[in-house]
Amino acid sequence: MSFALRPYRHPDFDQPCFRDAPDARFVVVDRDFYAPEGYHATAIYPEYFKIDGKWQLAPESRMDCVVVHEPDGSLSVKEFRNLKKGDAICVGRTEDASEGIYVHTTGFYDPSKGGEAFAFRQGRSRETAFSVDYDNLYELLEHEKRHGNIVWVMGPAFAFDADARKAFGNLIANGYCHALLAGNALATHDLEGAYKKTALGQDIYTQETMYNGHYNHIDTINRVRYYGSIPAFIEAEGIDNGIIYNCVKKNVPFVLCGSIRDDGPLPEVYADVYAGQNAMRDCIRKATTVITMATTLHSIATGNMTPSFRVLPDGTIREVYFYCVDIAEFAVNKLADRGSLSAKGIVTNAQDFIVNVAKGLGVWDE
Image 1: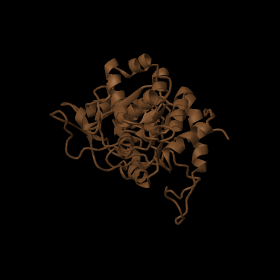
Image 2: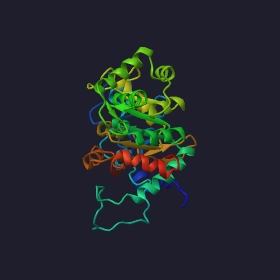
Image 3: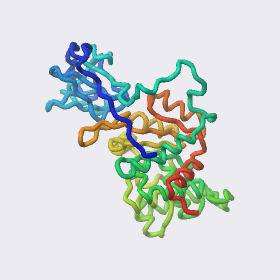
Image 4: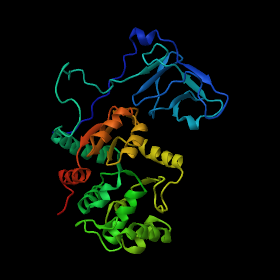
């Protein structure tokens, strides 16, 4: 069957609750980095604000930010740390249009698909049957390769396995990745796999521990730092495989955000957490599908900056698809607990998952 995006159903602004609603209220702040008392905080859903009698959608929305009415009449969504003196910030804690603010949670809901009041196995757990999720994902990725923007968020577990590295490298090489978000560890161990054929000193295929293998990841970092950049290291050392190699080869942007645990780190790693967050947001602003795998912290961070919708250049509003893949139910469920209610969880080994995806898309070579 052919893939089709779910249509967006706009609110009916002719209803009395919208027609009779007051304009949204905006308060000008007198200091930087400050929102007035009673500010309205955004969620993942489309949000409309009544201004001069007309309902206006706030584009590029995301969780836990505030809405600013710009001098040109447009609406922008900003983090608290980016607020400036003189910004006109929306205030109001209701979301039902009664204060000129409406949060539209059912824009992609199909009313013809009702649910029962009581039914078994409605959650996502290790007992869930994921076959249909894989089939839907193959169709989605084929569509997004041509018409969308796919962002992958990865933990270092992928770099520990030869087949997982190859599978994801093939996905990148064949156009199924438009940006990669990760930490120092993913890139380090992937490059170690190409440079030393190990990850944390273990052979990436046999898992056999190499003599003095515990030096391999820091030797790799040290060598990359010698050349000054990852692309220079890849060129000079003749690296020809892996996740980061394929990103460089295909000009796919990657954002590596540092942590207090990092060794090295690699030259491209963001040491300033807010600079790294900004770089991640730049990628997410374009994303129409996000898949996070085997990384609880990066999954939640990405979920917090990913809305459930995207406004396309032609004004069309489309759904943003969000998958979280992890072997731990805790990681999948915690993402939803943190507000990413549109995320779909797949509880499985992420290395097996990526190989299955590569095979399902026909980019796996034995």
